[in-house]
Image (cartoon, rainbow, N blue to C red):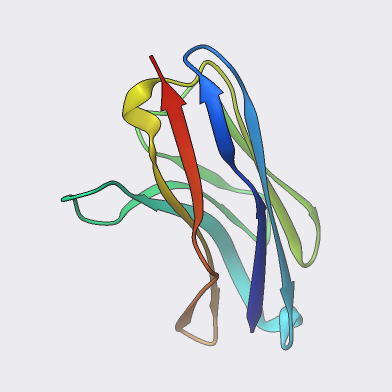
Length: 113
């Protein structure tokens, strides 16, 4: 599975950004896709994930502000609203297929105060 992420950038606090991730390869083996983030000096953490049947899971820190959606079998979007400076991080797309995690290249999200 190859993952291509897009979106991200610089936004002021309170603003919005949208990340997109497109998967290619053995896409029909993907059971879940999601987004993780890693801030400087911190461990990578789950932001949001969605399973093939549409079940979603969010980090407590983003609940009510971020929405993950699956457009089709191989594309996942993350709509990020009411962004906060603490959301600043490199965001990574993730997919799980055949019990193997796959990662896309990171995309920087910077929220200025």
